[in-house]
Amino acid sequence: MRLALPRRPTPRQRRWLAGLGLLIALALYVGLGYRDAGPDPLPLDATALAEAKELDGPARARALRAIIAEERAVAPAAGFPNEDPRLLAAAQQLAVLAEAGQPAAAYRLGWYYMNGWGVARDRCSAVTWYYAAARQGDANAQFWLALAYLPPNGQGLRPDKLAAYQWASAAVAQDLPIARELFHFFTRDLSPAERAAAQASLASWRPATAPAPVIERFPYVPILVGLWPRQTDDVMPCRQDDTPLEQWPEE
Image (cartoon, rainbow, N blue to C red):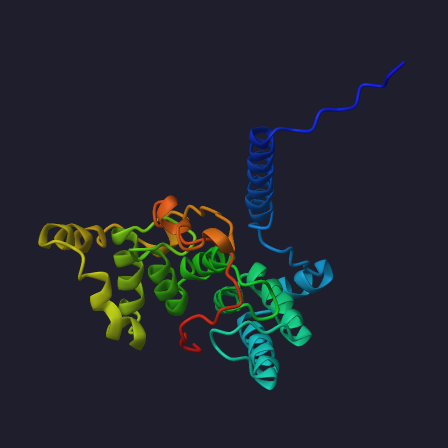
């Protein structure tokens, strides 16, 4: 009895199998990018949070100054990730103060996420914390949230000229120098009619009741990063690689 040997695949079948394998590999690559698109968990100490909620305003301000002093001892560079464990500890302390209702701490934590200080660099988490601080009146957070909305590429959310104008105006109203200096960026793409409508909207618009930004958490997929923002309506991916960002102001 002769055993039937398996037939060798034809060249056409080999090409088909190679193409199928490539598609599967690409699907896994993009799929893993989506899986990695979410924020890294930042555990909060329940006891520390309860204690922070009991602090009055001056005590919270002193606690924030102590965190910033520790940060400056590390001396991370703006725009460059830094994995020093002291910065992770600082980020956790900032999260505690932010959850306890300290808007300046929420803004600072957004800054950590935007730069990648102690945590994974993540635009979407940064914008979430900027909004938490901005709606409580933090002028710095209002300005950076306005930038996140500014076309042509939203920072983890869809560009919105009106929202960018409103938040920038809130920072200007508090006389934030960088907001006053760069306010022309928020008006240059508005037609006269749009500018008039945006100015009129400020009569009823308030930071405390402004809608939260709608985060669109697209992953950072290196092989597609040049095309990805255009493929997602000009929303920049949340995650960023280790390439230095443009230099951001420190405050």
